[in-house]
Image (cartoon, rainbow, N blue to C red):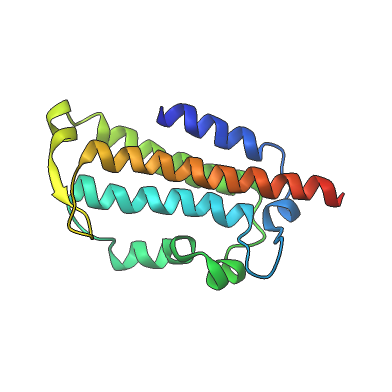
Length: 152
């Protein structure tokens, strides 16, 4: 499922130029490029939480902070990258995820922890959330891309 979701995300951004990746629909929107990095950044956060039982390190927060927070910071910091930059980031992060998942068994998927709201969740739920999160942002990307076409 994760591979299918990623395939559809990549299809949604195929062929976009730097200007299209940086396009802001309005002053509060996020660019397609920022949303792509946000997808990767959220996955990095789940890697830290589920594979290493920790929060993001200071270095990780520095690298991924704008992408995690989106908004004004992302609008100013995530710009002028070509599509291959975003695709490399997504691929690198996913490669680490798949390598880590490959070292775990089904019992690991059932291991329970608590969410920030205090709800008991297992690792399966957390990783299901990762690709559900990507689906949500892929929808935003498709919406933004459709607006690009109407402006041309």
